[in-house]
Length: 454
Image 1 (cartoon, helix red, strand yellow):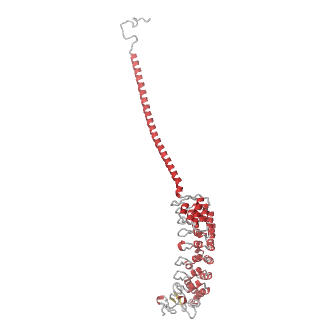
Image 2 (tube, rainbow, N blue to C red):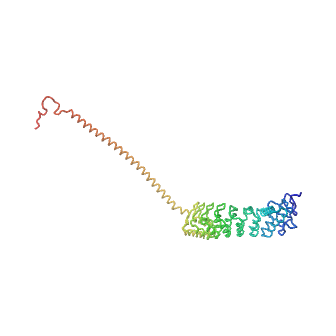
């Protein structure tokens, strides 16, 4: 019974790991011109599990590498764009499996081994497909896609790049097109900092790649990086006019989207030097010129701070621009300009700002202080009037109370007077009842006979 560990060339394969002697050149271990199935080479196929298939069809576990990053022969062939070598490596799998299995089992086993070989990664986590996509070898990419599975297409290296992302980064439009045709869902994969392929292409300025991605899926416009910046933010910052125009054509409202700092694409554009990008954004929505970020800075403040004299002049021409807008730390654009080191650009900016009526923040606050004093005086006067009214109401209430008291006393006096008169009348009437006409003498003589009346 043979041992599962065998010698391959001069390598020590103890525990399944091949170690090179110091005099060996790692890049010369397996020359690319030499077929693995030739008479002078061991019949060996590598997979990501380390499977070795010998001519007897017996699987043995070894780890054979070439190159300083543990690249396989397929990696090196893909990096060089050697299509013939790639095809030969994959073809030799058939010849090594002849006589081991038949029919469907044979086809299935060969397919599994090829998928393992294509899916093999080096120390950086890169597959042969990744290497071919990075270098722009479209023929090799097409060949490897025949044997690639979903894992191969989406496998990321240590930098979180997959084959599509690296092709987008390098601007290989044809390879991007081939990969998307093979699997349209790849456009939604994300790379470092949650960046989609569209965000990466826009930041790199690859217009053809951007258009290709937009033609496959416009919903990519809604996806932002982890810091909130979308494709328009990055394209505007880098001054990629064609890409900015393409993105705004798809969605003009994209100009109003903000990142986690509250910055619009205009905030990013004024940091650069391309006034054409600024013009495109303002044509899409002129009102964004007054949108502040979370620090209260408008595009004018940012352009002034970055010493972009031409862009400052462009912004001040807009009627919507408020030249004396204040930041959260209470600074106008002129305050920012005066804090800049003396230079031709800063002088031009200050001259331009003053031409459009810019003032310092302390000058801007003087009328406000006067207005505040006036409002305070009015408030005090109103308070005094209210106090006076309150006192007047109190006095009126006292007078009304006195009048009611006098009224009650008058009624009581009138009642008493009437009572007295009534008593007098009653007394007279009572006396009249008991008074006899002619007096009360009863001697028989007339009372009036002793007097002479005429």
